[in-house]
Amino acid sequence: MGCAACHIPYSDEGYYEGDDPSISQTEIGHLLVHSIQSSRKTKVTVNGITYSGIPAETCSSCHNRGKRIGVSFLGMIESPYDTPWQEDGSGQLKLHGKRYQYIQEDVHHRVESREGNPTGGLLCQDCHTSLAVHGNGNLATATLAEVEVECADCHGTVDMYPWELPLGFQDEYGLEQFIKPRGVTTDLLEIQEDFSTIYDAEDGYILSSRGNPFGNVIRKGNEVIVHSASGLDFNSPVLKNLHQNNDFRNPDKAVTAMYQITEHMEKMECYSCHSTWVPQCYGCHVQVDYSNAVRSVDWIASGKMHYANGETSESLGGAITMPGVAREGRTQVIWEDPVLGINGEGRVTPITTGCQQITTVIGPDGNTIVSNKIWNTPPYLENSDGKGQRGIDMTPAVPHTTTASARECASCHANPKTLGYGIGDGEYMKNYDKDRFMDLKTAEGKNLSSSSRPQMNSIPNLPMDLSQVVTRDGKQLQTVGHHWPLSGPLTQNMREHMEPCGSVYSMP
Image 1 (tube, rainbow, N blue to C red):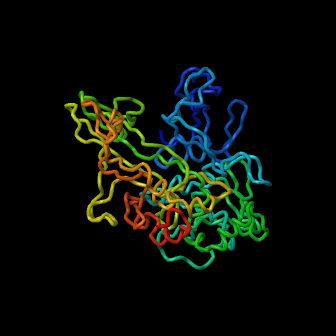
Image 2: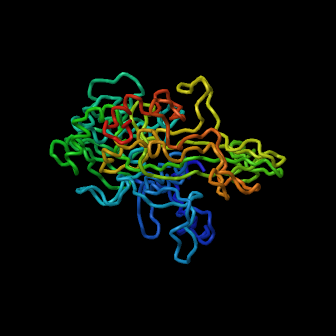
Image 3: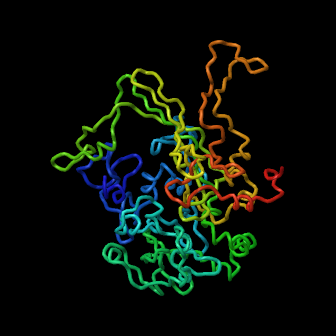
């Protein structure tokens, strides 16, 4: 509901818990307390607790689909099960329409912070400031264009402080790099001066890779201080200081990965190594059923509908409907061994399932029109052999599952799934394009019963594991972040150089 969606606190249970006697405290569907949550200077008090800033749980109310970065930041992944059960034996409650299990929260969110820092985690708005969330005057067509914060903006590299880096570092988009150090600034943008909490600039406000000041992140000597909207101040780990002081948690591994192998910092996103898990929801099975004259809400048309008094269908009802009803399912949801690919900036990044749509359509007469269909892209797209690419997508992602300790070297260099070859080098979960019968059969595989029905119906255009994006000889099997010309699987040269000659998967 506009501004209130972020700036008004709502609990999952939907009860009002404030002091306004005109609002029911026993009826669901109300705000938690009648207050505005925004920045450090705006305090909210509820049940004797005073806080500031917008909780990450508010952001995850929307950011729980697609790349699932909101719930991933909180450490959770979607689960098909309703366990663990509640105390009364009933199933786990649904959140955003789904149930979850806990894996590991992002290091930036953890209450147990780095030694020397206060207890507490960062809020989403501490990195995704007003420029990205409220807009910068440009109409972006994808999140990659809208979000400008990069890891090096606060952490630098092992041989450069953030202010020594050139503009555009880690945000290249295939453009020629700047050379001069970006420096810092003591000036804020007008929108920041008008609406943001103003902090002492100390030795200057840190600049983003695009040259905009982070009004809440400042340089103090050779340190970087992050002022959180929560009221906490954090000393950001600066890689150059950690390197010079030999203060890495795992010095040998860190120096090797970030200093001795220069290609890692030149060609990879930091989170390629530091995202040790990523939610991967393989197979988005969509069924649209037009039988029995069923109808469902047309959310696009209803969202555009306005009454004469300016209200919408959200407040007055009367949503527009359309023929058919849709439902969805999954093939599997896993989190281990994130696949790597190339993002729109041309850097190595984790890739995860975008929308691997597999379609079934039931006609008005109840007959199936389309069954388990994977559609193809237009044939003129690259790597499609003139036939079009399978329209199932693995998409570049910033998983928001950052850990201080990086992935083990072998999890990338000796793991065929990471390279894009699929689980177990593509040897498993194959042959989806055949019906699977579990009824009585002969030794030769012939069904004994004439009434046998497939236990698993075929998906005609799917001969491989859904996590496989490329073959060893370079044939691309599905799209990878097709919105951006630079994105795709790891290149043939990268894959061959990453995999050691002694790998059991690379041997003849």
